[in-house]
Length: 101
Image (cartoon, rainbow, N blue to C red; front, side, top):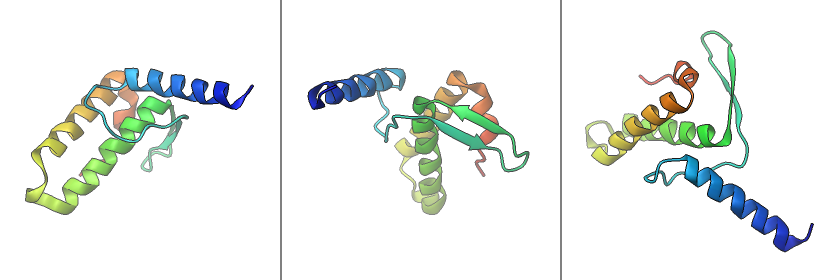
C-alpha cells in the first residue's frame, strides 16, 4: 500500500469517527480504543476510540471545572454534561468508570 493510500485510509477512519461523535465535539480523537479501570472494584472495560475520545474530553473538562470553580465557563460545564449524556447512551457501563466529585 502506497503513502497516498495510507493517508486516504487514515482520513476515512477519522471521518467515520467524527460522524460517531456529536457535531459540537471538538476534542482530540483517537485511532484506537483503550481499557478503563474502575479503581474501586478493579473491573476493566474495553472502550472504542469514539468512547475514549469523549471520555478524555469529559475528564479534562472536569479537571478544568474543578480548578476554576465558579469562574468555569458555562459552555464548558454544558459540554461536559452533554458528553456524559453521550457516553451514557453510547455505553451505559462507562458511567460506572467515571468518578466525578
